[in-house]
Image (cartoon, rainbow, N blue to C red; front, top):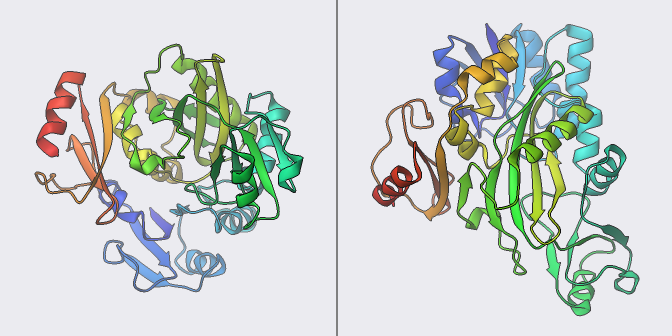
Length: 364
C-alpha cells in the first residue's frame, strides 16, 4: 500500500502509525525548509497548490491521498483536486469535498447552514457600519474567513464596535454567549459518521482569552449539559455536510439559557486532537490513514474506545520526563508534548481524576 501525504507539518504525528501499518509513504511539501522531511520514504518539493501533489500521485501510482493540512486557505484547492482525482483516476482522497469546504470556510455561510438544518446558533447580523448594530452588547465581531481567533473581537461598548470598523468595512456580529466552550471531532467516510467525546475548553471571557492559553479537559463535564446532545448535534452537522475526513466543531453551552449553540465547524485536523485521543483512544489523524487503506468503520472505532480522564496544559517550554518512542503515541505513553518551542502544551491521560492530578504534578 502506497499513500501520498500532502504537507509535512503534521506528519510526525502519524509517522509511527504509517510504519506500524507497513505503508510506503510519499510526501509532497512546498517548503524545502519544512519540518519532518526526513521521516517519509520519499519526499517531493512541489510548487504551492494541488497540481504538484496530483502529478506526484499519478507518477508514483499511489493507492490513496491523505492531505495533512491544518490551515484553511488551501482547503478549497484540496477539495477541487479531490473531486477531479477521484472522478478521473479513481484514487481516493481523504478530505472534504467542495460543498463542505465552501459551507464551513465562510462563517456567514456556516451560520446560514446551521439555520437551514435546524441547529441552534447565537443570534447574529451582518454589520456594514457600527450604527446598524441591533443586538444587545456585548457582541462578538468576526470576519467571514479566518481561523485561530484571527480578526475576532469581543465588543463591550459601541466605541469598541467603531474601533473594529477602523480596520474592517464589514463584520459578522454575533451575540456574546456567556458559558462553556466545547469542541468535538466527528470522523466521516463513505457515508459513515462517528462523533467522538466532547472536550471542555473553558469558560468564555469578555477579554476573549485564546483557547491555546486555557487549560482544557476531557471528557467534557459541564453541569446541566448532556454530552449525548453535543454528539448528536455534531453528528447531525457532519451528516448534512455529507463529506469525508475530520470535522472539528465548536459549541457554546449557556447555563442561563440551558441551550447548546453551534459556533463553527472546520474540515481539517484541529488543535484538540491530542486531548480527544487521550480521552477516548481514537486518534483522528490515524483514522485518516485507516480511511485510506479501507479499515475505517463504526465497529472498528467502537472496539478502540477507551474511557480516560485527560487534560491539556499550556507550559511554554517542557522540562519534564521524556516520553517513550514513538513520542506522539498515546498507545505507549500517558502524556504527549506538542507545539513549537515557547508555546508547548502537554496532554496527559489517566484512569481516574486522582491519578491524572498526580501525573500532571510529575510532568509540570
